[in-house]
Image 1 (cartoon, rainbow, N blue to C red):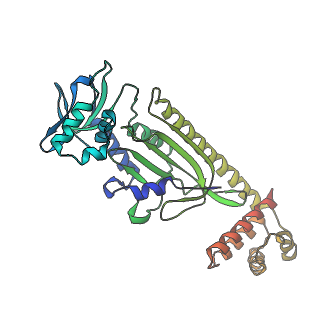
Image 2 (spheres, rainbow, N blue to C red):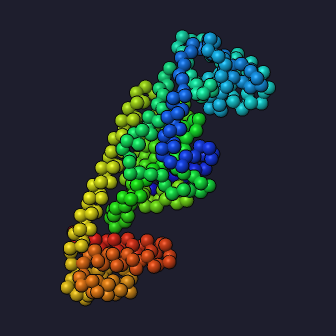
Length: 342
């Protein structure tokens, strides 16, 4: 099993204005960004770094002058092959002149620029293929109807994030706990994208046992990861994400059905005709004998000694153990009693 830290890293990276309280709010934000965005294909000679109103901006001949954010400015410096930190140490006029003289203006292939609400958010060559955040989120909205964000983490972290550079969502189905090899697991997934080329598009699905306050996913199994760069045919990532979510949901439903069947069988499977026979049946599992005796008294009062009756009674008693580690160990041992119903 593995401990997954993608969501925990996001928790410490995100500013309050990049956190969203619901999946719907995140989706609407990304939808609005898409509607407010415009992609322009501009010849290199028509893209000019300039000094304007005390800051470095990008002038598109015949189009206008646009402010930049940190990401698009970083891209501009990279295309000009100039160190961003060096440019930031210069005066605005000098920095603009350096970028103007070093920015590649030759060539026939146009640059791809995305402008959102009057600000230049990204600049790419022709090999970059855009995939909007909302198009990725819509796959989750269509398929993962029973999934929701994790409990609020440290500093109010929600697991749902988006900003100028990228999007990340952490969703779980905490109503679908099932037993796997005597331990309890629930399904969840991470999904991410950047419509400006800051990161890949991808998904990671898993079954988890515990999520702590800093959103580390503990003791995950059946972890499956897919990611893709924003090159040609990046749209196939949407199909792959859809396929992986369908697989996760199908596995959840199959496991829930199997678990429900095992419970029904456990409810009808007798451990014995009396407390003595039932006690012998559950011996050897490492369960506290004091709990076993109390469970036998409960089942005797109910008039039957079934596998489910023993598991139910013992689990209630295990909940009284103050030490979390010991309590979890007892719960695992109790869960293995279900094998007596197979």
